[in-house]
Amino acid sequence: MDNILYLVIPCYNEEEVLPETSKRLKEKITSLIENGKIDKASRIVFVNDGSRDKTWEIIRSLHEQDSVFSGINLSRNRGHQNALLAGLMTVKDHADMVISMDADLQDDIDAVDAMVDKYLEGMDIVYGVRSSRAKDTFFKKATAEGFYKLMNTMGANTVFNHADYRLMSKRALEGLAEFGEVNLFLRGVVPMIGYPWDVVYYERGERFAGESKYPLGKMLAFAVEGITSLSTKPIRMITGLGFFIFLVSIAMLIYSFIRHFMGATIVGWTTLMVSVWAIGGLILLSLGVVGEYIGKIYLETKARPRFIVEQFLNTEE
Ligand code: UDP
Ligand code: MG
Image (cartoon, rainbow, N blue to C red; front, top):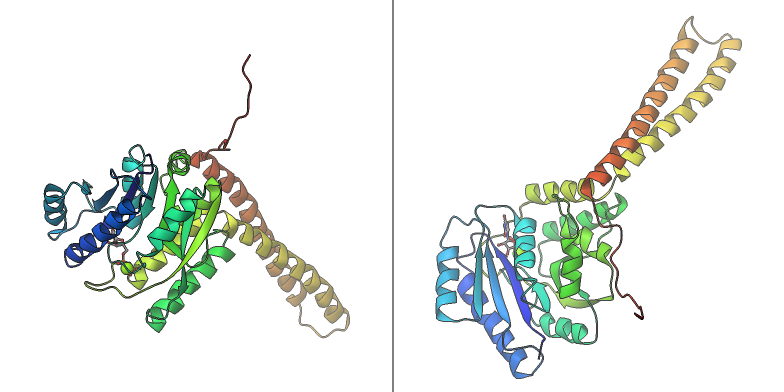
């Protein structure tokens, strides 16, 4: 059988949750193996993202006690996204499907069964989507949902209410490996890979121990990172603004002339008024045009794959 599943879990200072998390994940993996859905060679991989507490010692002892646990130790703290990517890229040659999730099990692990089922039906990417955030605080819910809306209006298309809880097949991971960009925003890049995909809904629970490693500051930085690493829409918005202001300057020109000929202005007002708007508009417009070129350079330097071939039907002579 060749349905080897690897669970990838980034961990940063998670000594409080690891004992419980490892126990629950092992139960999950064991039951999936018993039901014949996944191969015996499936693994739970903890990625230690430069923790300052006992996280790595715990991972190491788990691995020594039980071969179902594996560990990856990063040289230093690189943040959630990079830790996740490190895990995915390290295990992709060993697994047929990989599921990523957080160490605190806020994302219901029972959704794993549904994800594996979808994989067995032929899906390459299965997104875990939060159906409700009843257990999140009002503040977390409002900021998090605002985050997805902001991201989408700024041109970073992500799956709404999907964090990094997802299943990816081997070939989807190989597709991901083609993206050579350094600032990789996984939630935005994974949908760009393509291949058949589906979603699984689940309820998001509370963190059962320890505290969030994503305070508001980090979340805002994450949003800025996501927008600037995915799209050049902000530049386009400057161009649009410049064009709009230039149109206003024409309206101002007409208005000023009318006022001028009505004799209702003091000397110099007309020229000042028109030039302020016209020059402002022209500056913004030119800035936008320059920005368009910088945006092109930016996208080129990312060297994203231009296509990923899903299938090549070809009869050789
Ligand atoms: N995490 C990480 N590196 C970091 C910060 C967080 O690997 O620098 C991990 C953390 O251990 C957890 C996941 O990212 O497994 C999500 O973090 P958290 O649960 O604190 O975020 P929240 O659910 O509050 O958004
Ligand atoms: Mg969490």
